[in-house]
Length: 554
Image (cartoon, rainbow, N blue to C red; front, side):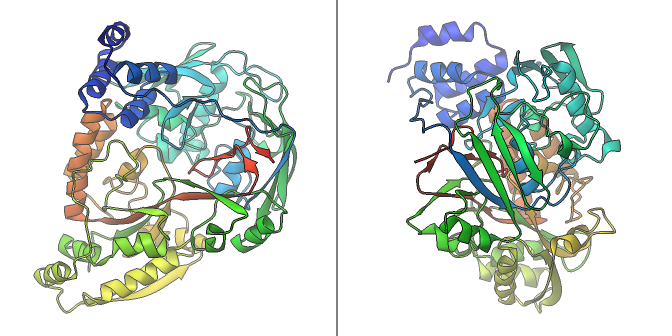
């Protein structure tokens, strides 16, 4: 297809310098179509406009959203993990709980499987010139299940609750240093401004489904969410029984297209094997999240379909930089070089993962600098580094970790690989409660261990991974890594509004972390959802959410 410069010029007239720079990158070939659409959505450009620009640039437009719609009226039955605590939008932190909350409550925008942001309760958004203020325009006519219209006051109250340190919100891991209580401002009933602590080029992800606590609920909310389950979503609560399950019915007053299913039912399971048997036996239609190792039996089952999403979820292997034996970065690099990442992907994860390169910049992120060489297993070089660091005779050390997903098997593989460079690794595998403890320094096996493996869920942008576990003052800095150059680069990346500027800084961060290796990122695993044959229209996200409004059964 040829470029239509007349249309491109017409489009440019109403665009900001930042938006025009992104369009130039697409036209010149510096930015791929995929990255253009994803970053354009972040800047608040509508999906139809992005499609028009890619077509005018001589590339294919947006894929058609039209698809065969299944028959309405089904009851969709889902198996999921048991919510770990009382369901409350402010504090919820586990997959089982946020799945239930998300059935009734919605976000300003939704981070799709392709990392493209799509409007939900907000119709549009845009930054000021330096990314310190983001303005969101709200959808009109949206009703809460309790009857009132959703307006700016509800958005301000919802986000202020999460940004208030006094509420011990789970979302403080996202908002700390970015957005304070009182910095979300009502402009009018349908316009909200977010005044940030510092420039932030990825901010819309912080108030999207990517930040799973950021659902919009009434300003009048005072707690005890399980009594109301009030929200704006396509389903309304029918019944919730703690530790057992929940059911929902279609919201006939929904602002968007009415949901296809008449009802949805969720059954809670303590373990994966009963879920697999329930799916195979026809008692449920969907397993929301299926770990690779536990679900091997379903991967080739002809009666089951697997929905596989590329995700950036991973298991971080931290090496404590402020104490022996990992004070010397050469020892840390030696351990990283002992891992066989190809075997991790093909063997441990059955091909359902991507190799990691010891930074948070996964292959799925558009800002990842793919020119940085991939670290490979090199035992000879690892032994040389151990000798140079004065550790040629090896040492004993304990790896402390949690019993979750494939982490125990990952720990055993590491134990075997580091033997080759003289390291005797003792494994201390704890249940999750004992591993995380109070999740503060001095009271947590996670944050205090010399060496440990910790699970990190998917995020649409790497900001949280760059800050919490790696910045000098990071709240999750189990590696006790303190590096001023890194802190400066991470702050610079987070501030950048321009994709090319993000990528340039990402490359510097990737190279610095390869040199320092405070944390080993061995692989990023795919998010798997299993459905029975004939179940269609199911849309999971790698954040453990499950959108069922278009679901149907044959």
